[in-house]
Amino acid sequence: MSEQQDQQQAAQQTQPAPEAQAPVPVPQAAEAVPAPAPAAPAQGGEQPQQRQQRGGGGDRQQRSFRPPRRDRQREVEEGGVESSVVRIYRCAKVVKGGRTFSFGALVVAGDRHGNVGIGYGKANEVPMAVEKATKDARKSMIKVSLKGTTIPHQITGKMGASSVVLVPARPGTGVTAGKSVRPVLELAGITDILSKAYGSTSPKNLVKATIDALTRLQNKDQVAKGRGVELAATAGELS
Image 1 (cartoon, one colour):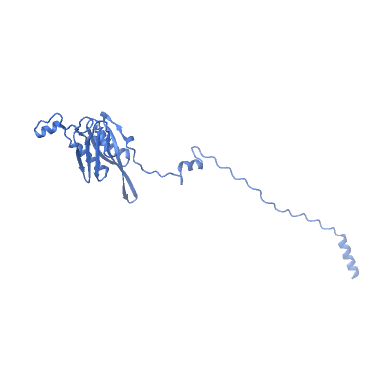
Image 2 (cartoon, helix red, strand yellow):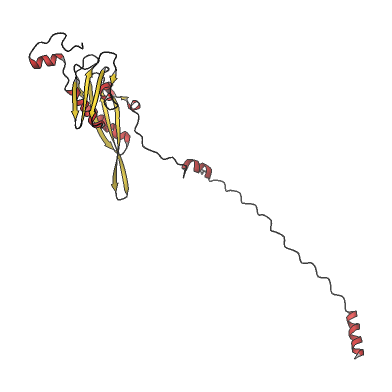
């Protein structure tokens, strides 16, 4: 047994020593991959920031309808006839797919020499409605009896629940009237007058009441002819 042990020990001593194992490399953290560069916009394209500024999203301002200012809507047409927009109405019709809007325009037309008329028009767009109303106003013009820069006598016009009282005034007084009555008086050629409105403040009724009052005005010659008498030269003069 001792011989076998001696042989085994000798064989172990003669065997070469095992090679040292190479150290296992420790994995390092992955390097940060650079983010891809943004693609260049196509021809005619827009950057997202520009698209946001133009297209909006949450920054888009709500467009509310505002009727045009009266003094900016006064235009001079053919033949010296001027037109003024008194009011713009917006009407909504409920249909299966939602609501459809249309617009109505109340317009006064006159030449400032005793001829004045009113018109009303409706269309899907404001300019078309104004054009229709202007044509209607030009067709319905009436002749007003004036006395210089004012009216011959006091008169009251009525329409529906509205009534308008017109009172003659001395030169230099100006036009004392509301925003619905003023365009009718100015385009008729009246520059000195006092007025007072009673009842409903509907622009349509007030304008029609003013036209009713102007239609029934009579000068001194018309009154004398209707009565069959001869009036004094100072009749109807302001005291």
